[in-house]
Image (tube, rainbow over all chains, first blue to last red; front, top):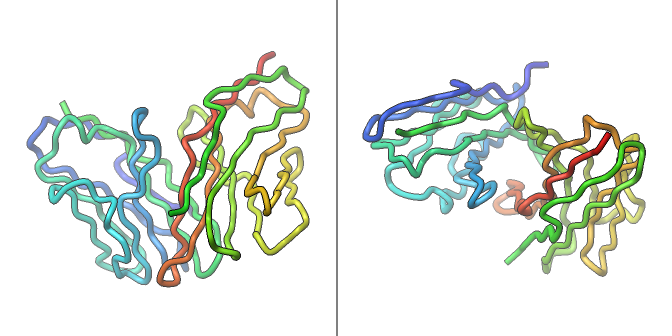
Length: 113
Length: 116
């Protein structure tokens, strides 16, 4: 079975540019989580969806960040405009119903110059 | 609010020895789930083991086992016969239920180094 697929694996761009991170859920999963990992702050939950509906976006740092699920198997996390402090590894994870564990993608390492 | 605490930022163990990583959590709920994830240098987040709070029996997965003490709100991970490939960051995670979705709360991690 294919796992959670994230793209790109690495992204380097200049500040002010728009950045779009992509995530494909495991087939049959209905919950989607976006995390950000940095040395200073560890692993932070940004937003999560259940059945395509955003449930809690309290972790989204600023209005520059937005996330969507245009369909049940795909999600995007967009940063516009990007800033150097957004540099981090961004993970998405998906899970099935109930107490199923979260399965993580390999992450996107984002560097904003 | 629920919290997860991993009090050991770094640990090391000799190959083939046993090591225990500690995790405590705080919650007022009675039903919840606990997990240990491993993040090797490749940065993948890999599920190691999970425990349902309603089960008294400690979960085991090959060389990995937990010591779940519900009253003490403690959930430690024991790695037996440590191998070089066990070198990684280990994260303890707790799930709460919210609108039917299981939101994870992660600890800050313990960096484990297995020495040859």
